[in-house]
Length: 412
Image (cartoon, rainbow, N blue to C red; front, side, top):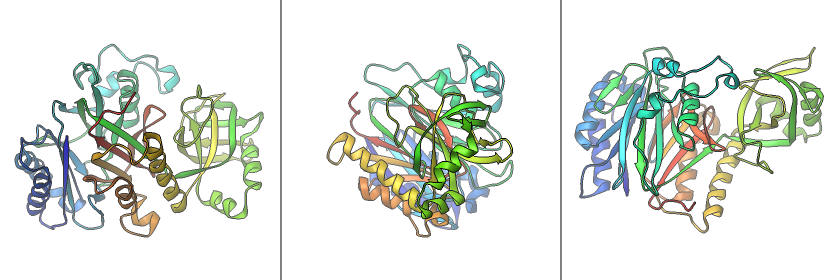
């Protein structure tokens, strides 16, 4: 297995593609063409998206090509507000790599019930997910890379179908973010640009892969149990009005933590209630979107049910740095020593992070490469990030979703 990355900040798209591809291929050295090439480009190159797709496919000779436009581009450093194009090329001996264009019509056709996830029931026996890949052999695994246009496809439903139709398969990726209106983003599939929907890359074979999802939050207070809820509204927690229970927790915090809660309070719900203990990585973080002082109910950006466990979280630059450092430290501790050697890395970071949040350049990529070494990396700043939490794939915000390819299949 081998990966290499190339980053170009040239203003002309043709020159940027040439430079990025040459750097990526030179790092791979002699051998067959790469099995996969992933390319990400800034808004400055939107008008040349078709030429970029064709040039990346031709210059790399990769069996599968995918990519998209992003507000900012990530390579060996983070490029914000300037022209940039990043390419990650990889050889995965014996692996099967395929690209799939998934439309909203295909996703909608597989929805078996109403809007409430609990009422939808099981997926049909066949759907777009059955064409994603082939049957896995002994010791093989499958990883999905999801790149989507946020205006033309329901990515949350797409991921729900991945979770149901391909259980246990991790998906990473993000929503194209170079445009803020329908029709402004570009998603690449092989040598072409797709006008809408999502491109899903399926990689199957014997290789190691780890997904790290840093939701940029720190837990505060204690675990809470929802005692009455409907839809996205939590009416009571622990038998008390939800707003009263939350205020009680906040009033017992130190003054500086109380100030953080006023600016950036979020709610995390446990993904796997069967676990005996809950810690970082067990909670799906969602925004607190409203509160009703009269009824004492709160609303969050997620569907909730009575009996679920939640915990308050705060999000700011300090919490986001701490969370990513904890994830990297946990990875090293879980695998022992320095961990398996990383061959290549994809980084999908929220466009609300970067300099906007941390006030310094290269925050996330510097932390990752500082912990993992000078790993070839490519990615972009997204309008929503895809990654697994608690064994299921979700669409996130303010997150850094990281996919790490390693030479050896992890034990277990």
